[in-house]
Length: 241
Ligand code: 6GU
Figure (cartoon, rainbow, N blue to C red):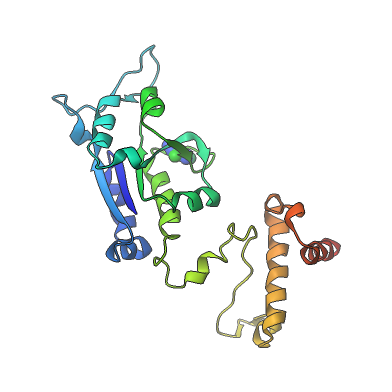
C-alpha cells in the first residue's frame, strides 16, 4: 500500500511513523508512507495556503490551488482514495478500516483553521471522515488514527496474524478479560478456569465474559437478530444474573 499525507505540519508525524508497528510496517515495505507539505505547492510569494472567507466571518479557509497542485503531483493520484479529515465527515469505524485496507493507494488531506474551500470537497476528494464527535485543532491526529487502524490490518504487519480476528469490533463483541503471571497478585487470583487446561470450557468462559462486558458497556453493539440459539441462551442467562 502507498500512503501520501498532505499536511502543513509534517513534523507531527515523526513520532508515530518512527515507532512501533508503523515503523516496522515501513521497514518491511508492506506500506510506503510519504509526507507532503502542501505549502511547497503555493505559488504566491509568501507561500500562502489560506485566505479570508468570502462573505466574511471568523477564521481562514484553505485555498484550492496548493492542495490541487499537491495532489496532482502524486503519480497515479487518479486511482487513489483521497480522504479528507474533518469533523463533518462520516464517523470512522472498524468496517471502514476493513474497506480501506483493500486499497493500493490512499491520500490523506489534513486541514486546519476554519476548513477547506468547498471546491476541494466537491472536485478532488473521494471520502470525508471524522474520528468522533469532538473538535481537534486539525486533521493530523485524525489521519494518524485512521492510518494506524488500517495499516495494522495489512498482511504481515502484526506478528500474530490471529490477533486481528479477535479484536473488539471485528467480532462484534468487546474482548474478554486477559491475565498473565503471577497466579496471585496482592491476594487477587486469576480465575480458576483459565488454569484448568480445559480448552472447551475456557472458550465458553471467554465468550460469556465477552457478552457480559458488551451487554454492560456497549449494548448497542449486540444485534440480537444475528445471534445463534446458543448465544441467545447465553444472553438470557446473563440478563437473569
Ligand atoms: Cl477529522 N478533524 C478535526 N479537526 N476535528 C475532528 C476530526 C477531524 N474528527 C473529530 N474531530
